[in-house]
Length: 571
Image 1: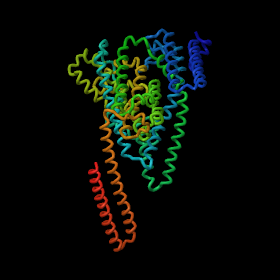
Image 2: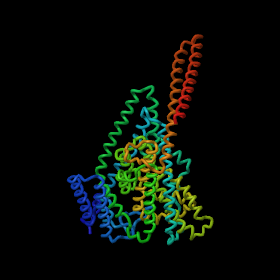
Image 3: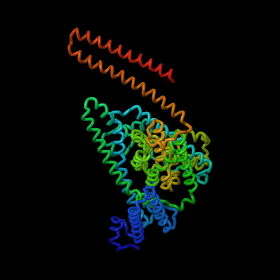
Image 4: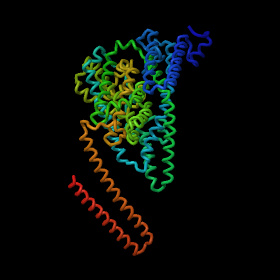
């Protein structure tokens, strides 16, 4: 039954997006709930985390209600075209699809707005810390390397957990797949091409490509150039720094506006996620989703354990990280969650921006625990039981699959975009890297059936890994201001103390080298002035200045050696 006669249906369907009474009623109810929640929040001024949980609950109830009305179908009923090849969906239910599009409206506004801010926030964050007069480039590099190492360790552990659980539960044992098409080879790149792709190809174009690592590199280059030019053009470079700071304040103010609608966006996200999935198929592939979520939970437990091992209070970390974790779970996008994660790390966890702005942006592209580690482990254990074992691939053993799979996963994790729908990219990359690319469509048709539900957990674990890596790297480099977040006693404290001693020695050595450089610069300036005379007296003077400079440097080094000897005796 439709609202108007046949000649008016196209207008309602194609422009308004509501051409059935069922969709009209459902949309009215949904926005009535949104309005009621808004009034409730204004009157009660309830704390932000509770607003999020209420939004999640209402979204879950609404989504399940629509699923119940449609009879919990075994097939997707809200999308007219089905991935990965956009085949027409014969089970498409138009009123349910129209309802889903309107329910997704607030979700799309929120994600689009946050995504709009992601690239400017990453660029300004990196440029600001690199441009500081006292910015220590070596320290930023050390924090970056520490963060990347932690992220890759997270991926390796997540892969081991997922692969082990998949083998233990024998996921895929009831499926027998055959070759059915190939994967898109453009979705995977060789390591040299991957590294080359990190370099910005266009100063302006990089902002439109939505690639995090090139933006980080460009931000660092701009900030470092401002820092270098400060010696000759201090006033102009101070203006450049002030401009970056002003832009940062404007962008973060816009971010605050979008965060205010987050409870409604969460409701929209969860409702649409439930509506867009064939819930009834849980009976067929529920074991795969169940094992996948168990692997995600154990990976999250590893994040908490590692925080404790390296001196970060896991319970306080968890309490202060709720906002980005919930946003990641509902938005299914690590990149869209990035601005909120940066804000939580700086303002809630009280971690210094030098560390936050360096590690967290990297975690949206490199070392995604959920999308790389868990996803690959599930795919390969499924591949073993559904393809390799019944297919008679005698050359493959479980050990060989595990080792090769781990290597391919770590390489693939160096460049996975943190946006919704990375399952197809990861599946193609892992299967293609192991020589099973021709099974891509068969595997993805099963793994991808409930990918929306799986992706929610994967993204939350991705964000958790980024927050964990940032916290540990910051703890290791003394960049946490919240004393309650720092544990006084923890298992790896001796390594932390050793790292501090090594860092102190390196800092002292760098300070000495800087003092020697200053001596050389001082005398070089004098020599350049004397050279202008261009006579015999000038040449004699220059020779005397060089001898004096060498003597002064030698005395400085000798004095430092004596001081070092006295310090060693005191210790």
